[in-house]
Image (cartoon, rainbow, N blue to C red; front, side, top):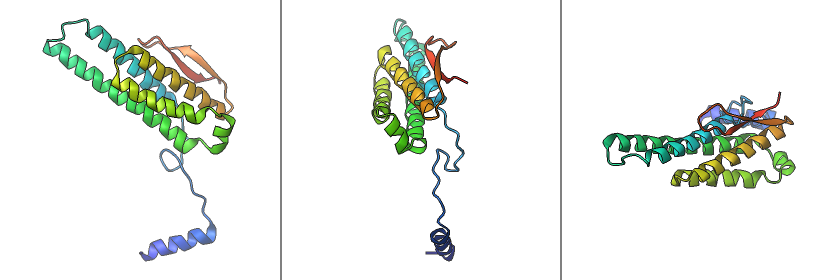
Length: 167
């Protein structure tokens, strides 16, 4: 063990530094489920495009190329959903949040599972279930901050809603 590590360890024991946790480990205090919602909308949109494309000639190189790209984007955005929800759940949420919102842990677990299912499927219902779960998570997140939410129809091609803080 190096001398600087020993000195810092002794200072920590002497001064009792508080450990800080955050998604960027600063902590910055910036958490927002908006990115998870945007990613879930993208998963829905990719399933819409895949459904439209499946009606086309699937043998052409252009059609195959589009399909590969749609699937790739859908996979990436389902992972973004999982990452964003997991970061907020792991770094922001505290035991008192789970106590005040008893459904929180199951909601997170289901959201992560739904993201995996949406990756495996091209059924729009799976993508919509992911979006709905992410929106419920967004509502639960804002509830921990004692901020009311509102669902607003998006102007995106998905024509689904976003959860926003009511400010």
